Length: 100
Image 1 (cartoon, helix red, strand yellow):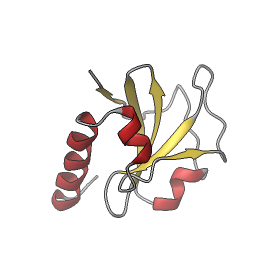
Image 2: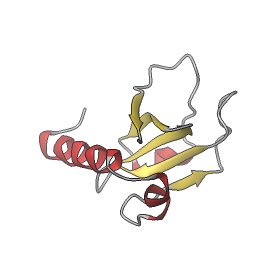
Image 3: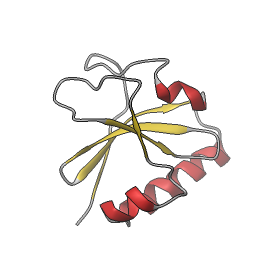
Image 4: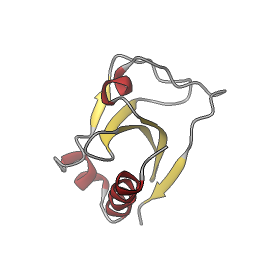
């Protein structure tokens, strides 16, 4: 669970994401949008990515057309890169953001 200051930081990041184009998401250094190559994506997902949600936490996400699907927010910054895997039967929180 995120503590209040970190929760506000995460919400600020999510609000910023909603206002960005895909090109901006890919290029914005503050998010550190990176393809995860150490984890095989689940069937039907082209690639998994990580992005900075707060100063100390990264999220696992994938792109589905105009949506970004956030799968996990790792409490351990390095866990995003392969310590755990994402499965269709897991209890991951999925947050859908879309672009107009």
